[in-house]
Every structure is written in structure tokens, then in C-alpha cells.
Amino acid sequence: MFFSIIIPLYNRPQEIKELLETLLLQTYKQFEVLVIEDGSVNDAADIVKTFAGQLDLRYFVKPNEGQGFTRNFGFERAKGDYFIIFDSDCLIPPDYLEIVNRSLKANPLDMYGGPDASHPSFTPIQKAISYSMTSPFTTGGIRGNKKSIGQFHPRSFNMGVSRKVWEKVGGFIITRSGEDIEYSIRVHTAGFRIGLIPDAKVFHKRRTNFLQFYKQIHFFGRARINIYKFFPNELKAVHFFPSVFTLGLIFTLLANIAGWPIALFCNVMLLILIMLIFFHSLIKNRSAKIAFLSIITAFIQLTAYGLGFMQDIWRRLILKQF
Image (cartoon, rainbow, N blue to C red; front, top):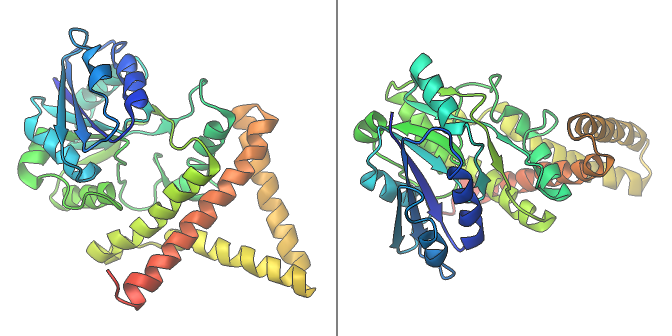
């Protein structure tokens, strides 16, 4: 099987350098790489040139349209039997393509997704963010695992699509704000087989500080309402959990300020959640510092998603603003 790796890029030259360095180490060699510069001001042309002759690599520059339509640009030019999408802030284990090739031969899928993990080189904050994005105590618990609620939806930081899917379904029809989930729902509706390849993990850096992480997750919360506009049945009870948590946090604060008796119960429940996050992260990361930071990132994830979710319920569903 020949793979086409498609990487949209926007103002992140250093990230693409690190990603391409990991692709040099792939044990499975039947692949090409398409790097598509999506209207970047700070482009990676000089960096990409240094990989010429080392990778089967093509570099494109196009006006800014967002990551969804940029991936379509790559699909249109890809030569492979199977297209693989990575975000530019990922590092790829050396056996990734070998694992995917072996898995697809044993268990053919028309579309797959893989999980993300924390790399030893990540900063403590990045490791804490990685924990909160995969934790069972946040919405991360429904991402990248076999026990997903409902149909599994691959995420575009680590997604594979067969050429057959591209030829029948086409590509992304929205370019941002939940575009990967919308796409996977259409692929599933068209009758194609979708699944998780658990061992096909990538090391996903995500954001490097709390503020960047908050902005990203706030956008994810808003994106869920965008998906709802296309597929109302895909809005599940679990998607309301961050909003319920956020409102509960606000209520707990008010109860403590007002001296209401219920404040004690709220404080105990909050303390239990904090302890669960701390000790679970401590077991996974073997670091008290990362465990402490995981409490912060978990609360950021839940409140940012909850606020973004509620914002667009109010703006798009109640006020009908678009």
C-alpha cells in the first residue's frame, strides 16, 4: 500500500521541521508527503527544501482557506491508495506506517483514526494538557478509545482516508469548527467502514501554555454546535457535561460567598474530582508536578469547552446569529 501524508501548514515552520524529521525515521517506506502552506506569512519553504532528496516530498503554497479545504487541496494532488492527515504539531513514531499498513491488511477500514500520546520531550504543561485531553475525568475520555459513545469519529490530527472514500464522498465541506467530525459522519452515512487503530498513536503537542489551550478548547466547544447544525442527532448528553460542570463551579463559588449550607456538599464533590485527577495523572505520568498541572488543565478544558458550547447555543440556536 502506498500512502500519501497530507499536512496543512499555517505559520509553523519549526513544527513542520520536527514532524518531517520523524517521517525520515519511518520503517515503512512506501509513502509520499504533501506539505501545503495555507497562506502563511511565516512560511517553511527554506526548511522544507532541506528535506529534498530525503523524502518523497512536494510543497505547495495557496491562499488561506483553513485546514479543511487545505486537506482537500492535498487530496486532489495525492498519488496514494490511502491518504493520511496529520496536524503540523505532531511527532510520528518510527513504526507508525508499518502499524497502519499491517492493521489495514488484517482488518480493512475505509477510514481510521488513531490516539495521541505525550512525548518525553514535551514540557510539563504539554504533558498535563495531553493528560486532560485523554482523561476519563474530562471529555477526553470519549476520544481515541474503543469505548467511544456512539459511532467513532476520527480526529484530523491523526486520520486516514482511503482513495475510495475521496472518490465517492469527496472531501471536507466545512474548513474549520468541527470539520473532521462532520466529515466522518458523512463517510459513515455513505456506508464506509470506520474504526480506531489503537496502536497508531502520534505525539500531539497541542498548545504550549494555558491561554493558548483555553482558546483552542473554547473553539472546540463552539464547534460542537456547528456540527449540531448539520447533524442534530449527533449531539449527545455527554457533550453537555462541561457546561454542567462550569455552571456547577459558578454555583459553588456563589454558595461559598453567600454562606449557603449546600456549599459544603459542593466543596466535597469538587475536592473528590480534584483528588481523582491528581492521583490518576500521578499514576500515568509519575510526576507530582504534572499531576498538579493536570488539575489546572482539566479545569481549563472543562470550563473552556463548556463556555464555548453555551456561547454558541445562545448565539446560534437561540438568537439565530451566524
